[in-house]
Length: 277
Length: 218
Image (cartoon, rainbow over all chains, first blue to last red; front, side):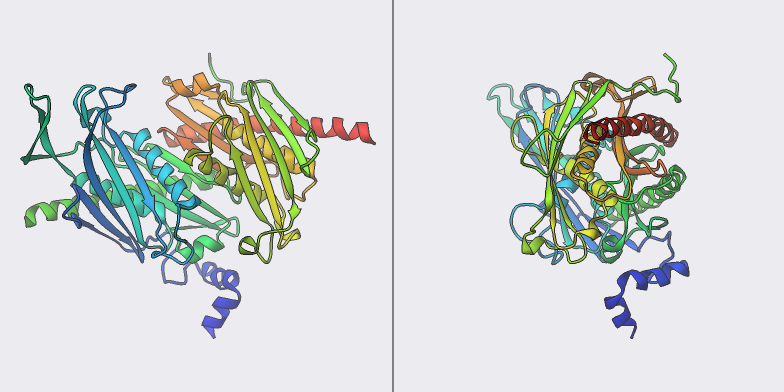
């Protein structure tokens, strides 16, 4: 009976739960799904991390390559993020060139990297106008069940923390780079941004960490990104129903506490990874 | 210069409607030197794979001044589309398509805001049923923490953070928000307040320009 109700009247089905201040999967309105993290999952990459928020699974691999810096920024390396939503992760994605959602997510991540200076681009430079690192951050969704952006940012941050670069020197005589794989160093992470997503139901009820179903029924979606100093790095609301400024404030406060939780989680996992070696 | 929240500085704006013959509605919107031209086609037949059974399918295309649309245009398209979707009563035209084509004529800052204003103008020109109007306002926060409304490209480049909001005409609430750079919660609240004030001027402009147009016809 309940299954029939859900299929026939999904909006009404969700409404009946929200009236009781809970959600179909048993969560409260302000509760995130259990978040699990694994770092160093890919041996062949310089850094990697896998994150699960409920069923949503996202993996990030970081590949470092040597390149010549661009002429307009000779003392900077560069970071190239890419979000891939393969047909495997959900039936809504088709094979072929990346769709709008994947492109928007890639751009969003690229903006966050640039705006917050997660990594100083100068740190990636090895020798001015000769050699620098390029970090390819490939983020792939394995299972799509809503809240993609939160998962992408967590996995990116954890993978960057996990990444190790070998020492590179330029041989003065031959002018060729020499890679010393014995000496590896971690990247210097300046900021720790964490995203929190919200969905708005019937123009007023705000729930956190929406699933795919909730996303498709919601009248608006919001993503707030904060760093550890409680500064906002992005407040993205692509459209949908209009909200009072006070409601937006609530979202930001929730995002700030979420930032603490996630950074604690990343530190714990990184620490346990180190001690298990 | 101390910012006065009650009278935010906006560049001169201007608009022209129904200037193209083929589209069902057309408009240009200019804010200072930033200028966007829009045409809307629809409600028209929709491709079967894009058909939605209970409302119209809205497509937004943004053409940059030169070159092909890039990933950045995709983000803008999404913002404009979802804002229009919220304002349009698209359930009145089920199984049909609405296509909004925005051509950037010149970009001198506050481009997304100008796109939103042009989009709202064109929807009015096409006579599509809407539950509310909306307008876009861009605020830049400079290095000293001062808020500049409707910044030029130069001011955008020098700013620490850039926030664009879409404000609705009914309750003057935030429909869309897109930001760049980092800022505090307080600064965001100030920017929203300034944008809400600025939106009143833009809505008044909408009203005046529509009034002027229809007073000639009647």
